[in-house]
Image 1: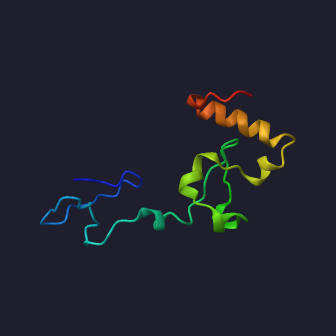
Image 2: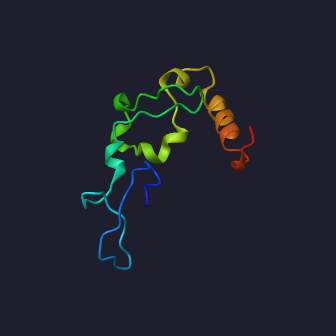
Length: 101
């Protein structure tokens, strides 16, 4: 049985299957887990704490599922050198980027 690669919810194939069809919810509705995660909070890349998405001033222009591993919290934003801390955290968590500090 197929499942969503984001939320692991089990999905089913519509019958009869036609080329290009996508799996759907068990009730036949189109699966869209992004709308179900819109109020989910993200973790800070520096400290791992809550970022505070519901209260963020950028929430109107942000797509949390796209930036989730890259956001920082207000506490870390107030550090003495937040950009240096940010670069170090990104370099540690994503070594393939080969960021020079």
